[in-house]
Length: 264
Ligand code: ADP
Ligand code: MG
Image (cartoon, rainbow, N blue to C red; front, side):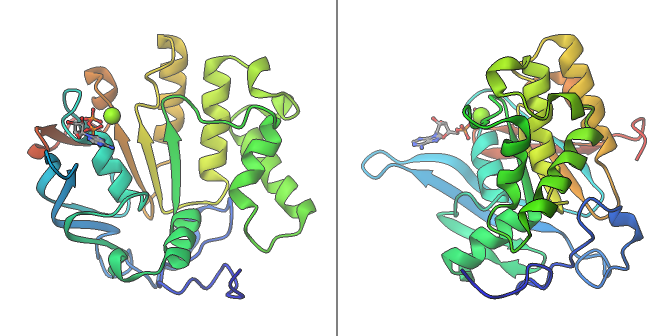
């Protein structure tokens, strides 16, 4: 493990007080000078060798702090590929990805993992909770690699669960919870690090409409001027909640709209 304290990351992303209000932090990083939080420049992602599949084709996109964005498009249009690249889970075949101005391809694996762990919160359609851990244990996993005392880690995980109305579920395992509750645990895990970006892939896709509405409401409450929330969905009604809507088809962005009727 690196000895770098977690509040002074090497890539220049300003840290905020965990679970504190990011709005109260005086910015010295990307948001302070209007720089994009995340930037794709002519990015392509090709799968396969003999038969090449262009999952993404020459895509350019800038995401600013404070944006709440949906990515829509038919199945196979490249939405998940794009989200994986935005979250540094994957690297492009061609083009450049910058997070807070830093070209991610220049980072070594350790730094890249650190960047991911500290700056990005992920939420997936199928929750991806660890079955043998309690809700609390699952949320704590997001803080495990950090130099935090177990007691403080536990406290922060508790706070995140409480924030999402799950205090009473802290000691339950995923199998003992409803889908909506499991997704809220996954959300608590995503926000406990107070990330600069929240990336979600069909977060309401496995939920009934009441739970989907509740989870969407939580997503809206996670907006802040320093944070970007990006949500992949194929559900038009879910996309309607986002102010910016990016539409994809065949690995390309075919529309990028700002909806004036959705409050910023
Ligand atoms: P979406 O999330 O919009 O459904 P994906 O990003 O998952 O789309 O996929 C885009 C394209 O890339 C599809 O044609 C898909 O089959 C292909 N693809 C995705 N992941 C892989 C992979 N690991 N290997 C080969 N092809 C892939
Ligand atoms: Mg997908």
